[in-house]
Image (cartoon, rainbow, N blue to C red):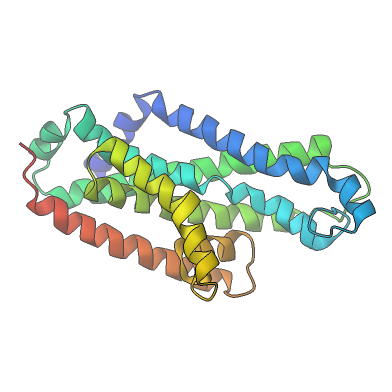
Length: 248
């Protein structure tokens, strides 16, 4: 298994895709952070506490933007598996390791590590923007808050990357898998949450928000457990599917 993980790691870093995805994630995080920094003064005058950085809850919201690139983590996982089918390397991969469940696990491990790397890049982006552009006056920024949010984002991104591997294993067509992943995260989950507010906290996005943003409906630990449950369940289904699929 160690050799298989090492092979997947080398395969990942032999392509330009890894740093392209990190760059996209950094841009998304920066765009999510900008409204807090640019509108803080106006928010204070208008009484908008959610953007007034003199309010602790607004500063919590600012730091929570570290977790705003979860869709990129999902795509990292999706592309790690569907790329094998797109480029025709999946046959060689499964001939090298016929036990396909091991390939799925190795890809999950590497994708999770990439998710953690994305979280670190996101944290550096947000902290840099805070240091350079955070307007005075503002609520105090504690190192423990930054570390706590970063660690939460790392867990969320890692689990979303595992979910991505599972989606890519189930839907081997790269375009279809990417569309389904983006559609779920950016459209369908919001629609379901809007129609059924009581269900929203129990969806993957609700669990992620509990971990990174401190949602009131669920504790961070419960959010991690729920997101882990989604990842394990979908990965198990995906593994069972790929074990039976004919790739020729």
